Image (cartoon, rainbow, N blue to C red; front, side, top):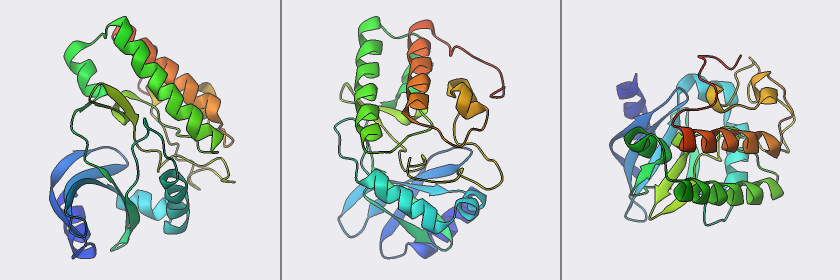
Length: 222
């Protein structure tokens, strides 16, 4: 599956980006380390899986990415580029040196109080800025919090639904988010989610940083 995805990307992005290797994958997307040929720099290129691309649609995806690209904040990972290549939707971010909060938690399990509070404050600052610009993240979790030079940066605002949207992210009821960190209203499938949902998720992340496990550990949002 990933091999086919990479081949399609390489075909669609020829002359713009050269894919080097896979950095990671999740249920919705795959991330590749790539060389930006126009600007001679290494970047992280995230491509949505074909079924997700088809579900969201290029117009909606690019509209939301455009809003995310307009966010300029020291604790928000910027968006360099986005588009459609061979029917696949992608966006491009800086290739950050360092680890995700998830990787640190896997090593240490529990963080010192000072570190946990600093990370929480920095993420809260990023969320406050985004919410004031009518953008809701919808998937705050340790995997989407990057740690770079003792500073936290929130990634993946591009996939979150903008507040100005008027429908759920998909027509088939697919929910954006991770069960262990979802707010009750998001878990129940409510369409109108606001910034308070992100703050609930951040509270779950803080709980995990201090206790060593998320507050809820069931396999589903219910």
